[in-house]
Amino acid sequence: MDFLPAALTDYAEAHTSPESDLLRRLNRNTRAHVMAPRMLSGHLQGRLLAMISWMIRPRRVLEIGTYTGYSALCLAEGLTDDGLLITIDQNEELEAFARSYWQQSPLNDRIDLRIGLAAEVIPTLTDTFDLVFIDADKRSLPLYFELVIDKLRPGGFMLADNVLWSGKVIEPLKPSDEDTRSVLTFNQLVQDDPRVENVLLPIRDGIMMARKV
Ligand SMILES: C[S@@+](CC[C@H](N)C(=O)[O-])C[C@H]1O[C@@H](n2cnc3c(N)ncnc32)[C@H](O)[C@@H]1O
Image 1 (cartoon, rainbow, N blue to C red):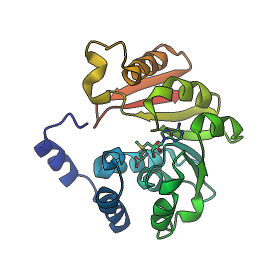
Image 2 (image 1 turned 180 degrees about the vertical axis):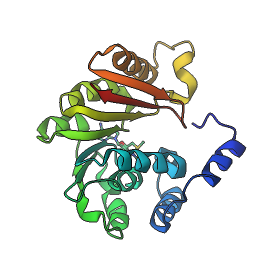
Image 3 (image 1 turned 120 degrees about the horizontal axis):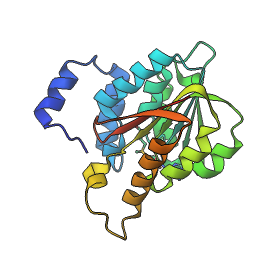
Image 4 (image 1 turned 120 degrees about the vertical axis):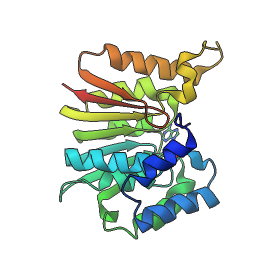
């Protein structure tokens, strides 16, 4: 969900560097051919992820939730020359689609896709990460935080998407709404954890940014 009126989002995008031709085509073709295209980060958030990546110049990036590979391409932009982005998704049906776009990018050999359940793949990773982007099932947000925090280097950054969850975080919680409960739990977990400093950015559906101290 986008909390800004559409006209303001349009204005913000009009005053943000444009998507590359490759990202524009990936964005458009995801919308045309793939289920649930709202999951894709899109122009504004994609440029923000790329900007953060350029600011950090990470050597290792972990992404949880690849989808059609849009945010992976954005996050890979700022990688160091020997950098690598590992991205995890359970949906093998999207692999060929994502790869067909990555293969048109010079960043293709910097993207390492792992197909599987994130909760099973993350513990197998031996790297220390400079940047982690959590953008998969919201039910597992608190678990992903616990799984990645020890793999983040001190001074490293964690981003998590959809932490305002279409505004449900400030509505009365329905007992059956496990997704919202998990988003609330995650936000409080991060807020209370002395291992991180954090900012909740009210961009698009909300991005939690945290720096491991
Ligand atoms: C919101 S989309 C990711 C969007 C992508 N990061 C982007 O911005 O373009 C969420 C993705 O998480 C994946 N996913 C959901 N649950 C998962 C799990 N338990 N393990 C791994 N991937 C999962 C889904 O298959 C989906 O492709």
